[in-house]
Image (cartoon, rainbow, N blue to C red):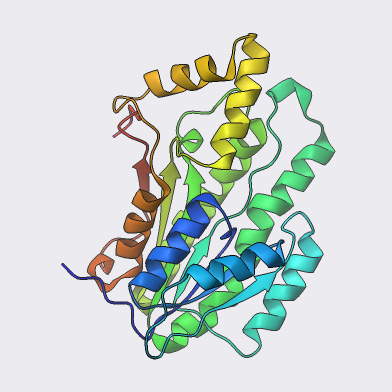
Length: 261
């Protein structure tokens, strides 16, 4: 099976590090023209320099801080005035960790804008072009915490669950238009986010960072964190014509940790 995305245009959020970057690299390797999004322009330019380029491919970037909802909305609206995308990868940085009784209503409001509002606005801006072209792939980077909440990630647990519900509803509405909508429930991957969470666990448990990291890996059947490029492979499949009959699903990518079917 050879995945060919030549002639397709993709937009990938939070694409300067970790999972977002790996997805952008793989989509470009499969022939897509990729627009990457982040708040750090220098990092964006560096990623553009890493993307494969063959005949017909044109890569670009958008600079915005997802924590500023109005700014991000304006950047996306400006982009879609004269662009369309065939493949949309909804991915943002996560909110600050914290347990359920440590967060206030302002924290929830900010997390709602970061994870839910940004995603909904971007998706709704992308849909008209997908409908016109009778082809679209909406791929959402979520978390395994949607199925099993993580105690110190209450903001992420809550808002990502809302995203999954919205996307499931949307998938039924646009299925007849040739548009698929699928969500990946992300487990532990070797990214900066995992390093940050490990340090938080170490401090909370009064153990070393190395011990906290080993404890996380020991909780996984595969006894290792996922590699970002492995995420990219799944995203490339979901972006391709091979996934045309797959929509409205949540796919756990977590090294076998999930107990749900």
